[in-house]
Amino acid sequence: MTTFICPMYGGLSDVTDANEVIQEICDHVKSRVEQKTGKAYTVFTAKSCRSQIIAGTNYFIKVHVGGNDHVHLRVYQSLSLTGTGPELISIKEFKTHDDEIEYFE
Image 1 (cartoon, rainbow, N blue to C red):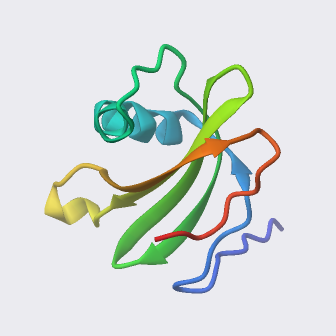
Image 2 (image 1 turned 30 degrees about the vertical axis):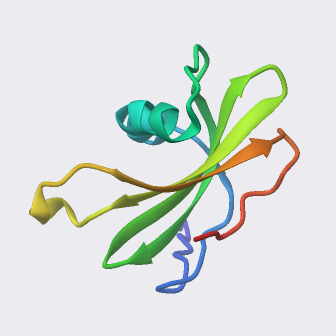
């Protein structure tokens, strides 16, 4: 029997490798990230993430943007019944591959 461990409501999940769904979320908010940072990214690859279940889901995503440079994104996805797409909440720039993904406002 396989056991699935779900994070406590409101708590952050463990870090997982990014998958196709997480990359699609990143692709959806990329232009907004570029707008906020004033940069155009030729590389924008989701590497890993954590999630937080609330009235929807907060995703904290580590994104490779070239060289050893990474950004951390906080993206909110409302419940699917509302029909709204992922919304970029905030960005942490100047991150590296080794920086841990942590909760941020």
